[in-house]
Image (cartoon, rainbow, N blue to C red; front, top):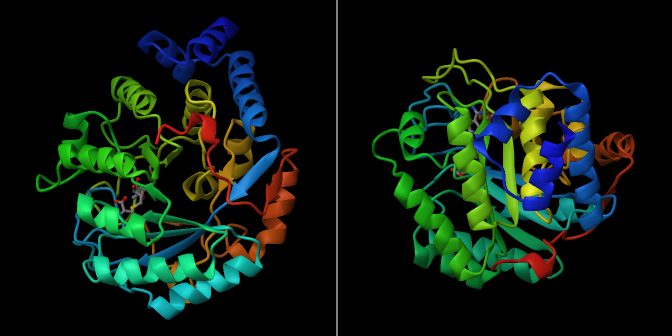
Length: 350
Ligand code: SAM
């Protein structure tokens, strides 16, 4: 059965049969071999370095109504906030002192952050921290907007594709949101020259092995520099509040498979993984992940960015707890580094 893992690693592709087998098998030897091979592949490309990104959750206002999301616009019991430019710059300052060299500004699709406002923030960070990478994760915008933000100094953009199957996309999103537009955004971002991240939730409602295969094929074709996957976790008061959470084990297996089909990719061990398992992020690293994204947002707003129930926000995932995180990562034989952590240039498709 280890042959399957070797075939995937050698061909950098996966078939429906191989995927079904790897997601369902109880054969621990095969799965351990999958994890080990993926971990070794990450080490070939990045040594034992784990990159950290400082996550700044700039706003939980959102015009969208994604059925799974705890900050969707229909959610009435969310305390809405948006950070000021000064608050964002404070986060950057604290992050720099803690050793962060990548800032990830993430938020709901909040119309307050117009291109002018966002470009001003990006340009100020770019000027103050020329040695840092600026990553944006602000959802769908138009080509001109992405171009302006890039010209202002942003380097990377995370936009999970959520699912590469149009029918599945329609089951996760209201009719006003379009699969084609999300795909267009990813193509635009790539064409502009961003280092691009896509991704999906593991175990989202209606996900099947067929939709997952499409996700993997999509990733293979797009050749993104980053792929963010984490388990779906139900959020109270959303249409999917009573759906089961995605499984940690399946997430780990998929992390490994992604590492094997796209060896130089930057692959976070996500907060959602850490939320479902006390050692989720360490297990993610042992399965081939090489990025962690501690929270740099102001403490008093963290609980409001509640994408799902019980989201970690005050423990080791907090940026201030860098020492605890360091200690955790060392248990995997790897170490956190002070580094921008760019994707290897030889493999950049953009
Ligand atoms: N608005 C931006 C966007 O659409 O890309 C960024 C913010 S959005 C909240 C970030 C990601 O959170 C989504 O891409 C989604 O995959 C994830 N997410 C939302 N709800 C979730 C849930 N219930 N469980 C796990 N992940 C979730």
